[in-house]
Image 1 (tube, rainbow, N blue to C red):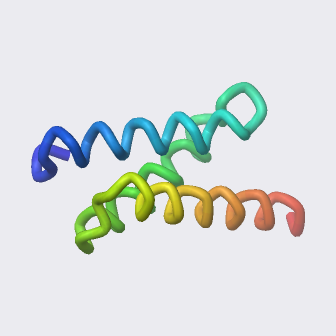
Image 2: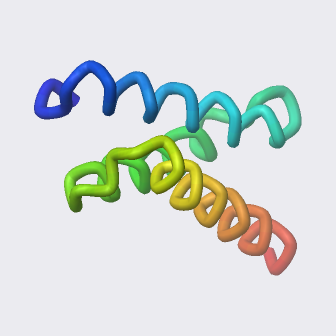
Length: 71
């Protein structure tokens, strides 16, 4: 994460916490890791605003929830 500026890192942290707060107990390690990886990919692709990262984080959450339902 050293490749990102302070604002981007802060935005990523905020989004990760907000999105994971919707999971039971704030999410397990694997769920948090999955969402964090999606946020990192987005930031590397230039999506660094709070709105863009929130969108990516929520999409990752929906994907996780759908994956758990079908399992």
